[in-house]
Picture 1 (cartoon, rainbow, N blue to C red):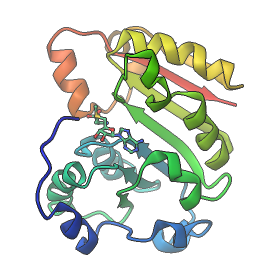
Picture 2: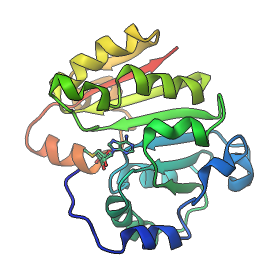
Picture 3: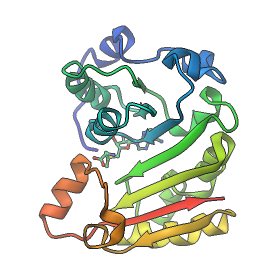
Picture 4: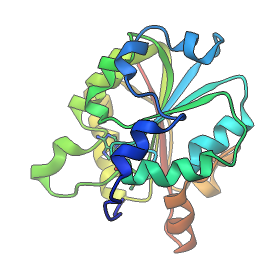
Length: 211
Ligand code: SAM
């Protein structure tokens, strides 16, 4: 997501009542923070967070954690958060490569990746959120019956992911090349990027994977 750096965003994030400041301390005990034993879903690279906040509104029996590495981007999401009365969502300003520092094995039931940066150059392939190193991290924190759900409008990144995910030992359980005209559209919640790209006429790709 292209966004200029907002001066003071790190300080604002550090003071935000909606952001967990030392997520490593919650490792293995996120349920205490939420105050219930509901399943936990995370969105990696949430951008401005509309998707995960909508899910939190729709599903009070789930707990949600939005993850975004850039403070300036997260700050924009937090503006929206202030308007909502929710008790089932927190935010982290961390890089996804460090997720296993903050979540214990099996602590997460669902991982959403939405419109992840495509990093089309081969030399940047390691930065793709469906690359083998990231899949290893998700494998560490996702429950045995947990699911990874990935949406994108980028054909190249989708084709790459359809190969990289099974190559890492995962199973593709469902997939579509045109989400909005497929049975997988039922209950679909649009992200900011999804709305923009589908308005331009781009098909949206989606896959669901498990191990
Ligand atoms: N998911 C949102 C949507 O669909 O509207 C935002 C998509 S935006 C293209 C991708 C976001 O992922 C950016 O905000 C970027 O900063 C974040 N991101 C990329 N790599 C990340 C990483 N390793 N850890 C955490 N966030 C990351």
